Picture (tube, rainbow, N blue to C red):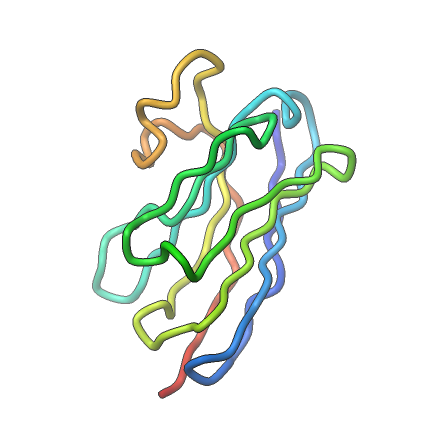
Length: 127
């Protein structure tokens, strides 16, 4: 069983930055890839970023490339999402999640390929 808790969200203006944290407890954190997803009102859950267990590979949605950076500190059982140049369209509840497979990252952008999810942290961006 893995428990994930996000933090760091808040209310900011367009152009500001936030760093989200996802603290994990339980087994397998250091062996699993992790991802960030977001869901805005009236929209479906959207992939944001993912990172392999050893941080050798990262993946980003086109909408956040160049602005967001995913990282992890396995010693602290924590994954981060640094969000710069925030836009109103970035406003959403952000969730971190643990990727199921230890063998393939083919499904890195698919919510159904993640098994454990955090409760989410709200990011609000005003124009």
